[in-house]
Length: 401
Image 1 (cartoon, rainbow, N blue to C red):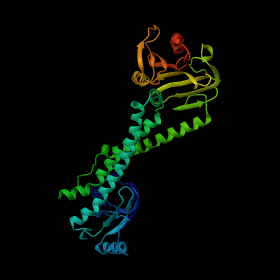
Image 2: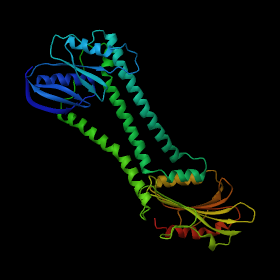
Image 3: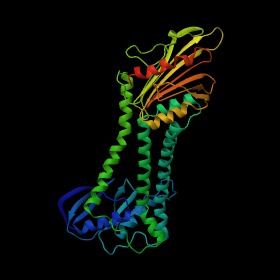
């Protein structure tokens, strides 16, 4: 074979081994011979046009018990038959061989042995698909549990507003990876399916149209970019949380056991201005979340009092600004989990006002206007909760978010 000086490095466009073999043979008729395999790329050398035969063989597992010198003897036998090994493809874990001699015998003439070899690809594809399916289902079920699950009202509502954008992106990405894994596995198992059917045709014709060619390349680029989105989002959120900047980054979370932030006002009813029972503690706990998947902004402020030897008594103001009416309805449903004695109040400036007792039999007041909501609750007998209904409605006007 006379080699010319021109060469090129080209990505293998197909995962179907039969299509890849046919594509390589067609390239040889155009004057391009594959000289070396580098993972998903091939080094081609310009030659005089002639047919070069290519065959792929699945890599044997390292765990398979083979006699000493088995692989060396195998390669020697293949060379005597006229087949030269070019390398191993990283995507299919297959060895790629070529033969210049048109009369060189096939690597395998026994269909049962060849079927057994390609069955490895089937097993490997199934295992990889099951792995990605497990990861996807774990992330998806976690997301669905945060959206629709929850044992108690406080836990369920907190889980809902805490759903991060990264969590949703990650679940979606894992779903895409699972589907791509299925598609890759289906393509890679084409020789096994052909052997099972006993087809006489060499393979399904590979796509040659310009759009179909570029569509594959665009898909590879998009999948690669999509893989970087969760990582970029996580790094961005981590850096902003560590800097504790004033602006609310994505999925921001803050918690303080001792004092409220001085640089902004949180929507809450101050227990110090009410007729309460016991001795007011100077400890105030709060949390905030902003720009999550479900929530524009949410905050919680909890004050407590000590009543002699009784446990601490709490007054809590939860404020929520949800992204949509659907999430607002879902949140209200969660806040009312386990509630008893729920009845409506007539508050003209609110779309809806409810009062009742929570799952711990403590009184609560829920006021909603559009996608904004305040959940006001306290320990039994701490204050006259329902007398603060008008003040709770005013908070909806005072809230900055």
